[in-house]
Length: 263
Length: 225
Image 1: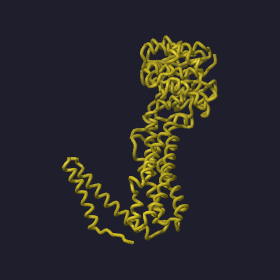
Image 2: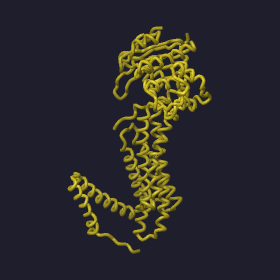
Image 3: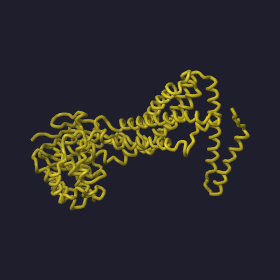
Image 4: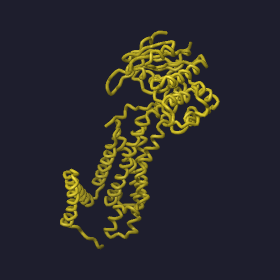
């Protein structure tokens, strides 16, 4: 394998490129100096930390090390999916965590056990990066889905009440908002799938090629991953939107608009 | 005279602010009643009307329909008979006719069909020609939108109308159209009744036989027969 290891000096040369951003910020008076520095430091620190953490986990490949790490990753993904959007409701965090958790673990399990067939079942070299990639995309779908749902329910409030007042069920009243929200959550993945390989070369595939894997083999992995991501973000989005629906529409066919609050 | 709708000690509290919106209210609406409720804004008129339409959940108390409590599964059915009309008409994209056909796409009303002839009669009461049906909903004035919204409800032959300031935002001519439509609907069957929430005292006197007042969540005259 012809693989060029990077030294601290190599990283330093690359990091110095941030000076370009810094110079631009000064020249154009963008006032971004402080933020640039902070972003640069975070990039270095977070990545070094995860590198050492993963190195340690791979060495101690026990299920009781891998599983808690996977749980923590999922929890953080669920929480950050809930943290966006202008409006919220009580229980939004729970809904977001539940839908991220359910969809990503189900789809990761299919990928690991049915497609890649790893042994043992917690093999961290596969389990952690694949779950990570699925989580990253699922959280985007979930957060866009919930955000769009709460937005549609706010702007479409009169229409929803009109449908209820005419004798519509809660499902009939919410249908349009649900449809829009699920679409909004699924579109980023669909966009990604249509341009992959033409406009963007995904990081995982690039990484495998850099590490000496043949492009054709790397592409096979990427194809599998794309479908796993698509399935998980679709499931996660639908799950999150339906949970939101259940929170905001009662079984007595009432729209509980008071539960929607500005952040 | 039979009681269509009855409330028993109906209350509503804003849970977030812990403010009583509606004090315990006993109210009975009989067939043939024309009730108006006036009061300043924020007095609880709309709160009461929305509770009658089962749009908001009461904090305590009971609503009876023909003497019976209303089960959750029955609520859409109830609302297609006891029709609530909001101050702000909500129309869907499409023509006036699309909007009038919309209710028949709902499960509760699927067995019924759009009746063009009776809709044209209703349009005539509001001074509109049949070609009004082809107009686009987005091109309508506020008054025309409210007329469409009202006809959308009236074509379903509701037993009771719950009118939440339907003319508050309208010009005098449109207000008269709305009043004419409601008069015609009421006169067609002596089992019908309505509750009209208004801030306009003249309109309340003109359009009702039983006049009530709402103030700080208390409905006056509610106990009278």
